[in-house]
Image (tube, rainbow, N blue to C red; front, top):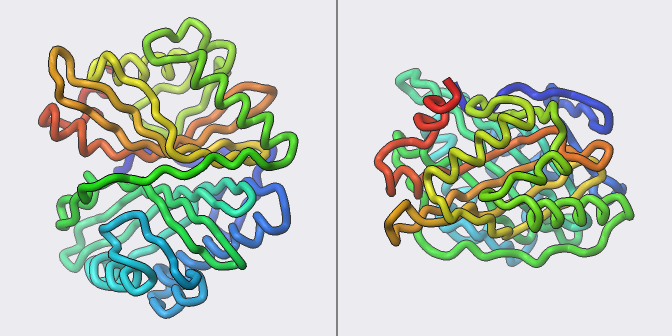
Length: 305
């Protein structure tokens, strides 16, 4: 079983063809780009049509994950060779997506079985930048710990960051301002102002974290067990009308050590009445497992029991 819990649908979302998907877009162009992302997974993964990728990616497409190789050819080679070759019944469903101008950040649920019948479940966060109706750039967060049993591991090398988009509707820019305030005023080491930004009934889509403001604080304290000096380093931010999406590093050092721990996260938050009310995570725990020799979920589950 994965760490993600089912969606809680509330005001301000749209239900797509994927049951209980949460979609946030503010303009017709954003909606068109979102449809293109949904079509990519439906046609290429669900319908096993690799050639459909040619309709999605633009000339000179830049892939920032070396696992896929370069360009459209690399994408088709890896998806066809590993994903579809290993899991013949694989499906990929956009569970959540937030759009801002030329970018779409999607949380995608992958599920299937290998030829022996062993179950496969994976979450990814995929960020696409569009130009002229085609995707021209891609960044991601992958739960690499779920891939390791079948071979692929997180590749080495830098993960380029993108420029923050300071253009949008008044509501999008207000949400960006709120996210900035949280990053500045609620460091992991001092949660005394968390109640100003997080609702008391804060809803978690992570099975390892209790619902509510207290559950959020417990989660932050657990991260500090891994790295007491942990800070959040934003790499990408996409803000919608109701959802803000991030790709950022939660990084610090193992206690009494110079061993760096870097948790690569994509966190999406729903905003209602000026507060964060709901949270969807995709986390790569590879670095923590390498540093400690165990999965942090073991610590989280012990602390919450």
